Length: 284
Image 1 (cartoon, rainbow, N blue to C red):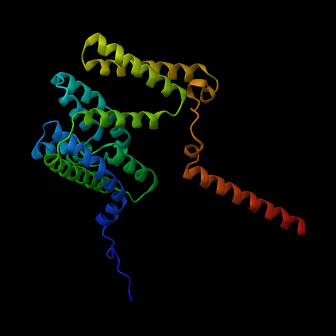
Image 2: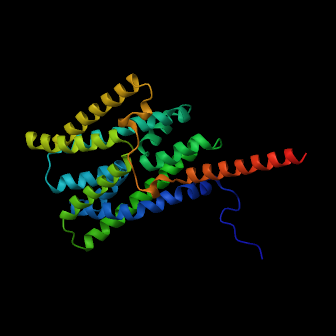
Image 3: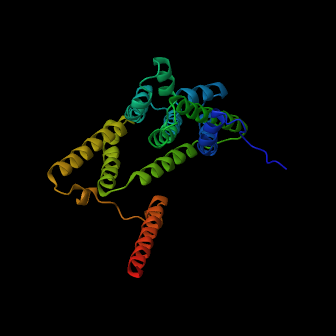
């Protein structure tokens, strides 16, 4: 009996969907939570859909829900989201060389559909797969956008049927950004800057009595981190061995990656082959 094939005609859109599927599935739980929190912050079904399509950023949408629940000024919300999303200018510039031959309309669609996760997939595919095209990359973005928007809408519907304590919004936002900080702390410098930004955020918020203090703390801490790293790289003979740039000690389980295991296996196989060659040369 012949086995059923998922993609017998090798349709490209199905191949790209298979690549994007893990990302799309991962959006479901966080998208549901985001939709529930947006509804708790006052968004109806239509507004939740519009925000999920236009903003398309989990971090920004969680912040938006949090700031609205505390009745933050519109100017503070705008400035906070502007600086948070400013990173996409850097992410997009790294992909520009792969899509520079496309039309302006295509580039516009590509830019408004990009987020951190689909950027990571597309950058990896562009760098490692010669057959990966800009149209494939745009498909990945649209698949992820559809998955995120649907999860947000379903979350909004769930939020309309259950009562949510608004204190959950602050907890969810804090947990999200604590996770992001922990994952980005790779060396002593990032750890110090994280601590500095937290201290400055408290000081600036007390000084300004506004959420804008967080933005000011972020800018100052980022500038200090840039100055330290730039100075170390310019003046140190071996910058990677400098204390600021050396890795923070992590649990052993996080220090061994799949790539590390593969390199170890390749090195082990190379040693065995070298020993076998030596034995053969001795026998001769």
